[in-house]
Amino acid sequence: MKFLTALPLITLLAGCCFVSMEVRPVKEILIVGDGITCNAPQPELGWNNTWGMAATAKERDFAHQLEANARKSSPDVKLTLDNIMYEDTMTGWIHLVPNPADVVVIQLGDNWQGGVPAEEYGSAYAQMIDELREGADGKIVVCVGPWSNPELEPFIAKAAADKGALFVSLKEIAADPTNRAAADGKFPKLAARPGDRGMKAIADAVWQAIEKELAR
Image (cartoon, rainbow, N blue to C red; front, side, top):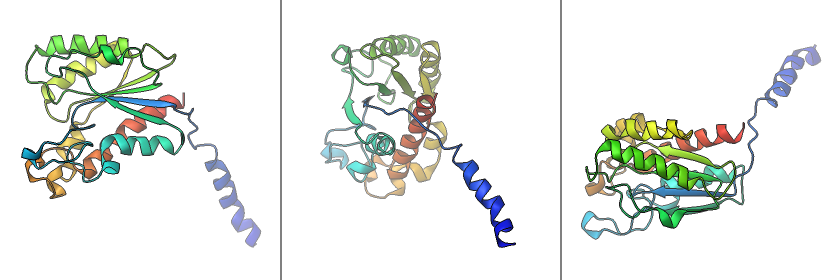
């Protein structure tokens, strides 16, 4: 009787083995980002660190939590962080072309202040997707929506769709007060930025999109 009772459980556990996601390894992740990815010290804002702004430690920022997610299946993955020269006008990425990364994450938009119309920003963004794809076959490109500047999101989403890139919106993550730095209580002048929980939520959402693509 005990054997018969255990049999369905054994069958269930065996079945679970077939639903685990197997993904191809990642060699290098290039993140082209703004202050959410990496920010130099700004003492006037109470920020004296060199990682993603408002995270309480380097390992808790978006970029390094994304790297930690990737290392679970790709222990030798290399993480490279960079930016463009002029975020407000969406120009200045020639130094990134070509690049050897097999995964490129574009996390831009929060420093746009109307330097160019949103339509022009979107067109430049689409061109950058094309050019960042150079250098490696089968490269995955992920476009992350802005944390702020929600009016820019449709143009980034369209650029991603037009160029066959993945798009991850941060609207729901940013709308949750517990995801903001104010909830951590460490950087009062950066209260509206993503805090530790927000950084993790961004990293998890981006990795989920990447992982699905790697499993194809």
